Amino acid sequence: MKHISLFLIALFVVACSNKPNDLIVKANVKGLKKGTVYLKKIKDTALVTVDSVNISGTSNFELYSDIDTPEIFFLYLDKNSAEKDRIAFFADKGITEINTTLKNFVFDAKIKGSSQQKVLEEYKKFISRANDRNLELIKETFEAQKIGDTAKIKALEKEQSGALKRKYLYTVNFALNNKDSEVAPYLALSEIYNARIDLLDTINESLTPKVKASKYGIELDRFIKDIKEKEKE
Image (cartoon, rainbow, N blue to C red; front, side, top):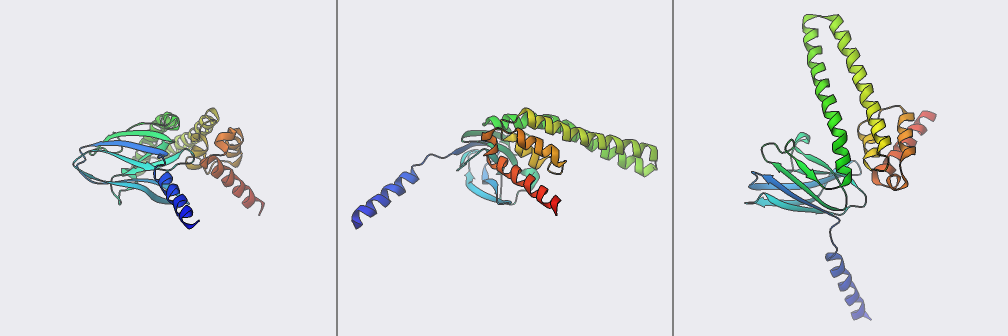
């Protein structure tokens, strides 16, 4: 009996070791000859490393991870990379391909993989334009403050306030139009978490059952319930 148990344990270990990886990240960083690359994700509010690889002489590499539902992962060049030096991507089971350069690690990144990544990139196109205009407004406000142009300052503040409202409304509408994508609850949690509770509730109630049961769907529902509980106090 003891020998049989050991045999079964051995079979279990072999079966586990041969289990295919849920997520395979195939990447190429042009110009990278030596260093360490990390694959990370958020777990219990902390950023954790799920895989890493030492690069020596080749810019092509693969990283692997288990994944239950689609979620955001991060590609770091080294352990101490700043937030601006990491590539964020929406991953699902299967293969994600990332091609970029060492010189412009983030800006040159081309990502091919999940359907969620495509939806996220569509959203980012609008937000990128909105963020560029916001930076211009900040610069113009600073210049107006230097010369004491109060009329200009008020006009710029009004435009900034309007831009913020447009961003919130765009994000809500985008999430509602993509209620069957895990990107919808993710945007609610990451982009407009401080929006009116009724707007967040509208997004939450619109989600399909599959998305509701996903990582971000569960987190959004919990987040809204926590806010409502605090409002009762």
